[in-house]
Length: 115
Image (cartoon, rainbow, N blue to C red):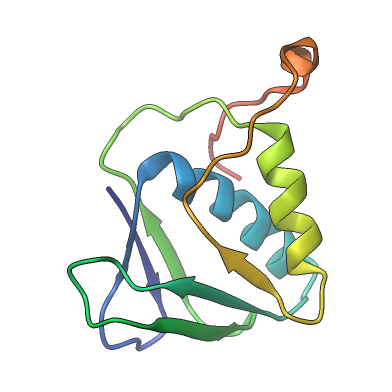
């Protein structure tokens, strides 16, 4: 499990490493452009029922940590879907459900290394 620390949030946000790697790419791209957006997610089964939304802004500290020391291959379809939602008025509605992608697009895969 990876962890996202955002500003002075009460608790860190725990997400599977692979899902967090994809989210990190999209969030870092938006923030590098000085673009703000919302990020929403459903609470984990071991948390109180519900969902949360945060306002993500370039001036608020953000840190990602990963349990796996090796970067994973990124799914370009997932990145594109997250980027599209980040640009919508409702922001990123994040789930850990990875979409399938066409194997013929494998050449478009990249490693989730440092940005």
